[in-house]
Amino acid sequence: MTSKYAIILAAGQGTRMKSKLYKVLHPVCGKPMVDHVLTEIEKNNMDEIVTVVGHGAEMVEKTLGDRTKYALQAEQLGTGHAVLQAEKLLGDKDGMTLIACGDTPLFTAKTFEELFEYHKSKGAVATVLTAHAENPFGYGRIIRNEIGIVEKIVEQKDATAEEAAVKEINTGVYCFDNKELFAALHQIKNDNAQGEYYLPDVMEIFQKQGKVVAAYQMKNFEESMGVNDRIALSNATKVMRRRINENLMRQGVTLIDPDTTYIDIDVKVGSDTVIEPGVQLKGKTEIGADCYIGAHSEIIDSVIEDGVKVTSSYIEDAIMHKNSNIGPYSHLRPKAEIGENAHIGNFVEVKKATIGKNTKVGHLTYVGDATLGRDINVGCGTVFVNYDGINKHHTTVGDYSFIGSASNIIAPVNIADHAYVAAGSTITDDIDAHDMGIARGRQVNKKGYFDRYPVAEAARIAEEKAKEE
Ligand code: UD1
Ligand code: CA
Image (tube, rainbow, N blue to C red; front, side, top):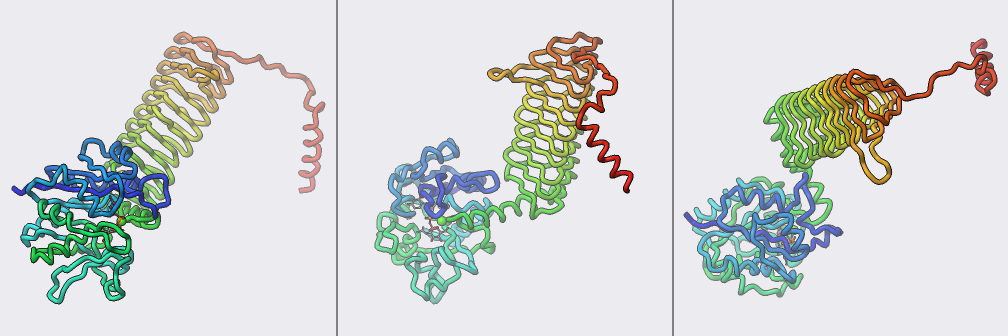
């Protein structure tokens, strides 16, 4: 078996992005571009992968970790110079080397595999992956001779009008005989429009040496899209999004409107789940089977088990166990855990709290830093008062308890199983099992007081009007 190496070029600043963030770290559907490239390369069982880093080296290394080795390109003198930085790590090895750029996030493992196969079948020292572009602007052009053999690759800025009219472009992906590659790299010059050492120039060097140079034209230009600015970034994201959505639909997920459904690459969704328009599923979110995710919900890094119903809600770093439901318009914040079959209604915020099985928190309630047991009813407008201005305090509510509406539960406090909080109470002390806590002023009715206040005059005017109707 021929050994397989890969070099990913990721040292550029990405000036055209106009960004503080290094270009290759810009995410496409939740994953940095360079990570997409690495992930697809890894699927080809490579013997070694080297990423060339420069601008933002530390951040790129932190992002990709030990999945790849690194070569530092201290000064960005061009793509050819960038590859040369990997010579110390790879230069003396026998085998084939795949080169890809960190700013082409749409390539698939399958295309890389096809390139390796084509390269081997042609017995070439160098094979460039090309594509037909309706608008080739900005890409290197593939210049072939009369019999179709690649003579050289010409950059946009160096192209004559005739060369610029060529629509076959360099995708920036190549396969080389490893040792031949490094030998040729020492011969390239920087006498071009950008004063850079161009990697594509090795093609002409091989050609002149009479070595076999090949070009493999892929069918799908879209996949080769390079991202140099924010417009291309949005175009690439659109392509990736459609790919993700179509994959999910093939696996049995219903997307009511895939064009307006935004799902990150690492999100998982079970079959027969229905996702409405405007939904965003981000990060490491996992959605089970038979769920309903209602319009404009946003779910980040959360686990949603089978049969859950989410109606227009915002969920981050939380868990919803099976058959529970939430919304419309509620918010699960980090470390919220909603029990099986539990109900979180509208305008409810839950933070760092566990809600037990079958428990209902129906309306206008804040639950923070609390552990609620099973089959509890929490009335409308309840506030778990958890913060004293410096520290957060914890509350527990036992199974089968009842919290009356508009109660304030001032933490730290323990409410036992089968306990009762009377509506409108401000609870500061523990309540034992089967007891009721009531903490509010007694009602006093004052005879005729209505007529003493301005409301009486307002009522009189309204009654006059009512008579005229
Ligand atoms: C490059 C190709 C072009 C091809 C296009 C495909 C060259 C000279 N041109 O152009 O033929 O059509 O990609 O998308 O190769 N980089 C470094 N060090 C450097 C310069 C660049 O690591 O000194 C990295 C960048 O971070 C980037 C990649 O190489 O990931 C490509 O560089 P970029 O400047 O984007 O090249 P293009 O102009 O797109
Ligand atoms: Ca580019």
